[in-house]
Length: 239
Image 1 (cartoon, rainbow, N blue to C red):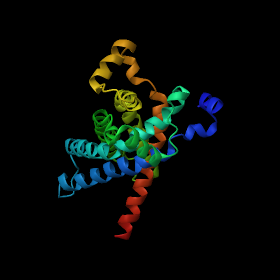
Image 2 (image 1 turned 135 degrees about the horizontal axis):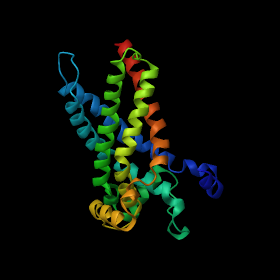
Image 3 (image 1 turned 120 degrees about the horizontal axis):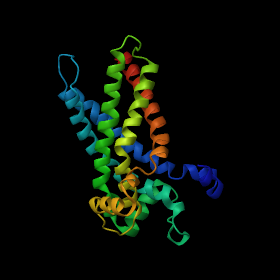
């Protein structure tokens, strides 16, 4: 963070913010909404606990749908974030997310917005299954103890643990997705990229950037679930 701020300026830390917000507005909204709807549809009708296997199935389906919806914004986000690492003559300088979407379609064709769809959907499946299902699981386990109630402390602890799980599970696919989406014109598949990284850099390269990933995903997961829980309370009270 210090290096980026020193060489590119403080606001370089917020490069790609518009694309990140657009991605969350598509990808996260769809996967969270779909997950809850599927839990209601496939869960027990007698009010008993939803089996973990059912929650995992809901997570897989919700992640698949969310990954597809969020892919175009994710392509722009990856490119905007990584623009500063490219040689100056190769930098794209997208002004904002919609400028990026327009220029990709104009300069490279609409199909480029679906670049990396495979690893992105796989990552979304793993993210939703690990993040949402582990949150529900941790919350259930904590509430089963005499020390936790359904309150802010429980939501914080559950979301922190869920962030740790999701970061670790998704790290390899994050590396694959980033490298594929950041390339232009290359037709390298996720499988080819996987074996190339393992062969040339070793298996540990698949977990490059784990710490900054957690520094992003940890607070993001905590804030997301705490806000979501409060919104659920408000909606329930209104009903």
